[in-house]
Image (cartoon, rainbow over all chains, first blue to last red; front, top):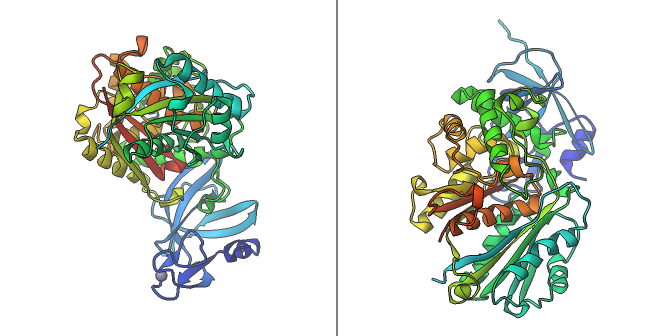
Amino acid sequence: MSVFETGLKKGRFVVGQCSKCQKIAWPPNDFCSGCFGSLLWRDLKQPGTLLEHSQKDGRKFCIVEFERAVKIMGVLIEDVEPTIGQNIQLANCGFDKSPRFEFSVVPEVN
Amino acid sequence: MNRVAVVSHSTTKFSLEDIPVEGLLVSAARPIFENTRNLSQNDVDVVLVSTNDNKKYLSAIVSELTGISPKISHSVESLCNSGANAVISAYSYIQAGLADVALVVGAERLDSPGQVLEWDVSRGELKHPIFWASMFAKAHKRKFGTTDEQLAYVSAKNHKNAKDNPNAYQPKEFSINDVMNSKKVTDDLRLLDCSRPCAGSAAVLLASEREAKKFSDTPVWISGVGQKTTSASFTKNDLTSIQSTVDAAEQAYRMAGIEPAQIDVAEVHDAFTICELMILEGLGIVPAGKAANYAIDLYNTGSRKINPRGGLIGSGHPLGATGIAQIAEIACQLEGGALRRQVNSAGIGLVHNMSAAATSSSVLVMNP
Ligand SMILES: [Zn+2]
């Protein structure tokens, strides 16, 4: 099983970063797709930003971008009207046949 | 350069019937032999099969069942784009001088494993195509002010065109109101904004310039070919344009020596209404943000220029057959044999087929 899937099963979202060129390997890979260098695995840096959202059966789903490299689709667990570019946190993740990503809005700090 | 022509084509009735994939394939191949003059099995150098079905060695099976012993024979799979990819592969064999005559057959069963790309983990649990399509729709609405009603015109137009396509899964007219009142699947797309999977098959026969006239007085030449794969992950796409289509179209236009304004008739991959708008913009048939009003004009004037057979929305979408059925329709249009669907004096035709949330596209330019 891949490092990525193993991480998700423990509720951790890990990304591989290239030890040679620092590029983040996304989607998950065994090596850097830019320079074929080896990866160092670490936790994803939070928060991300909201790119787009819609709603199905009362459940909001969206695309969020992290570290300008990792774009993922998941469900927004809060009943709020999000705005594009807003800071979004990966609140939960898991893996059961397919990955599961759940997002929450990062509260504005004044 | 060896020119390559479509010299015969067939499409079966799209349906929800439970037919083995081998049966679907040969039911499209058989009419090619029944309807093409001077064609015998010995003429066929290449047999390619386009499908997402998990069965193996299908091109050899189709060859055996139709009495062909081809030189070149294999399957082509690239999700919804398999059909155009298979035809372009056959084109390349002929163009390279490895073959003179190629039979390309595509089919899909209703239970196709090609409807979901499990590999794409960036979509999380949201695997169904409705999720990426809704993201495209919402982003297009946000950037260009596109409305649900404008999307409805695309569906109404394609269903109206499909009424004159006897092979469509369920030829039926829907009004703008019918589309607008169909079930909301997400906030941004309704049931009638979607194409639906079905069973079906289609076939085309390609021939070299040397052989084409033996089989047809009206060969339709493939004058431009373009293909592009940008990635396999939906989330890498820009949400308001389709880069793979832009690139594939540019290659095809350059090769054919044409501008998009010269296109008279086109079959484009309207998996969802929003896709048709983004494709027309990507092909340069209209500028970015202008496709919605263009679709309304097509509907109001009764023009069949875009998706004359009804596209995927009007005809149904048997994945491996779709690209081949699109090519068969444009060949039929350019031969002048499309009956009630005929676009008047169609001189230049285009086919656009794409895969996996728009991550790859194929474009063909064709002319009589
Ligand atoms: Zn690297």
